[in-house]
Amino acid sequence: MSGDPIYTEMIIEYSRNPSNYGKLEDAHIHRHDSNPLCGDSIDLYLNIDGDKISDIKFDGKGCAICMACSSVLTEMIKGKTLDEVKKFTKDELLSELGLEHLIKTSPVRIKCALLSLKTLKFGIYSYFVDKLKDSESAGNLNEEAANLY
Amino acid sequence: MQSTADAFEDLRKDFPVLNRRVRDNKKLVYFDNAATTQKPNQVIDAISDFYQNHNSNIHRAVHALAEESTEAFENTRDMVAKFLNIEDSREIIFVRGTTEGINLVAYAWGRDNVKEGDIIVTTEYEHHSNIVPWQLLTQEKKAQLKYIDIDDNGELMLDQLDDYLSTGKVKLVTFSHMSNVLGTISPVEKIISKCKNAGVKVLIDAAQSVPHMKVNLNEIGCDFFVFSGHKMLGPTGVGVLWAKKEILEKMSPFLGGGDMIREVHKYETTWNDLPYKFEAGTPNIADVIGFAKAIEYLEKIGMDNIRNHELELTKYALNEMKKVPGITLYGTKEPEKRGGVISFNFNDVHPHDVGTIIDKEGVAIRSGHHCAQVLMEKLNVAATNRASFYIYNTKEEIDVLISSLQHVAKVFKL
Figure (cartoon, rainbow over the protein chains, first blue to last red):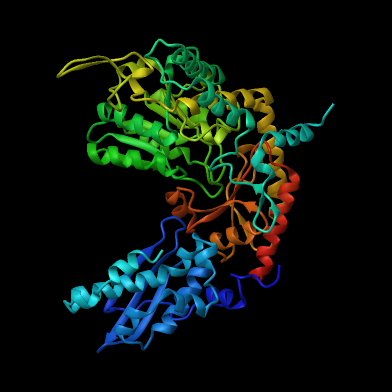
């Protein structure tokens, strides 16, 4: 049973010691989301400086896949511009942890892997609409987030 | 003469799906019976036979097929009544499942009998189907919903029931006969005697008990009793609500439509007799007829034998599981006080990860909140793993579960 395609050392390590775990008080963007079927539940906090993500944290409860993907997502997103975040794809996130195969092999567990990305996309969308009053730039973010899995 | 364990093992040949190989050609070990059970050929064949040879709507037409279908359908009602030791089969109402049965009571009885300030009492270990309908009702009526909490052993704290009853405002006490998460068997006699003394109605959610133990409704003394066929070898989409005739007769209808009426005029309608008053529309005829075969199958084995078989499996599993590193078992340690349902967690490992890892070994358990989020809050967990047993499970299968759990402990370095 060696070489488990999901439970790699990296995923287990991230699930035990998630990065960027915690809250940001008075964050510019705060978004909560959950997967009703499995109970994964996270809160994502972002601060924006100009057009850059200056800080990002998350907290919540979830399985190893959810915690590892949330950790890696926050690492990848920190310092990126809003425009880059808009274009950021699920493939980029999944390949970082070698989880691309979940899209085909596990329609259930893919939800765990992509919850944080869905939360991020919805959060950025709200920021465009509510704070920047720029629903045009929000483009298809809302639709993308809603159809992520 | 076969030993009892062999006799149970022999049943497996009746369940085609148990021959399945899953994932990497692993033998299926099906331990998700609290969610739904597998179906024997006898049930599957009865459904095919109905559609191939008898298919017709029931209760109306006078042609041959209609008469055969009606007879088979009504015959199931009589069998259910006999199975539960009910004298009058008109008290047996077919519904889609436990959820619909409870909603029927909340709607048709609750709306006429619960007023502002009244109290409905439920428990902390209920399935959402025995919480949400009462939230809807109490919110609509400005009534109150109260909970009997559970203690550290997973048992109900009945002192709280006394407190609620002493207010004189309780209209209904509704609880599950057996918890679908902890397996705890509720102290039915004690609860009912307290409620009877206070003149309060009682509903029992028997979804997890009727499939696994002998139930004599004539002796229990509750007012409403609800369960699902698919958790006892029957097809999905068939459930039963039983209530005393005097109560059912006074109740308003649930769904309006065909079959539940006596006479319909432009602006008023009179209701059909029991049980039809509560069975609007074409029912799930084929599956009700299939359900008869499930009852027949269980009666042939004997409900007491089934209980004993599951008790043996549960004792064995509890004993072996507690040896796995990092495992926490929930619920009472006394096997006699519980059914064949075992919920557990591993230290910090999320149940979904456990479920995925042991699924690769062909072991099907449930990971999640089991539609019991109130209980999850109480246990202070997001979710649990749950293994649940039935007549066709064996000790060898429990060994496969144990070795797959040991693998989980290894992967997560517990």
